[in-house]
Length: 146
Image 1 (cartoon, helix red, strand yellow):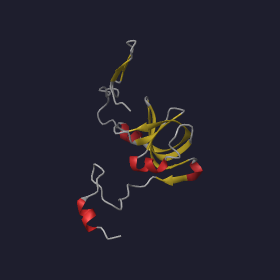
Image 2: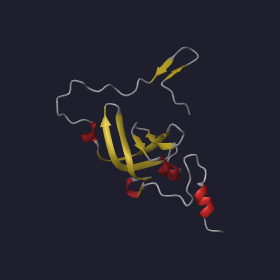
Image 3: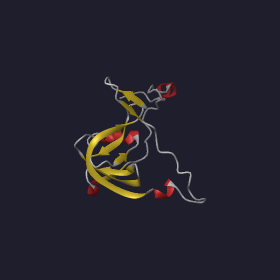
Image 4: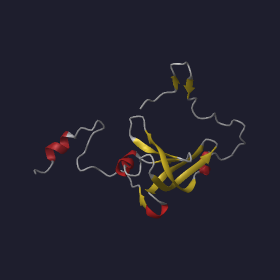
């Protein structure tokens, strides 16, 4: 995985990511923006690509119809059987549709809308780990003997 804002092919072709569109500065005072556009939404489709975060962690899926399903990294690891190209994926959550497309932050996920399961909050591990994946020294010292 490569995170970049610009790539250049051997033939000189460039691909540039200019970032999100600039905010509309001609808006009227008091006009509500994107926050009001979020609404409950269901999506169902076939996974075209698995989406990843900056450290390579799974973050969701791009469906064949172009819609995006976002999933917290801790939940994505538990859903390997659904997050694979060619697999059916359904989700229910808070969604947003604009000129860039549709994205849903999944609160429930499954193979079909009839078989959804909650995407729960991150659960504490049996062994505390620091941000580098190493076990906490306090946990090691005070863990019950096996």
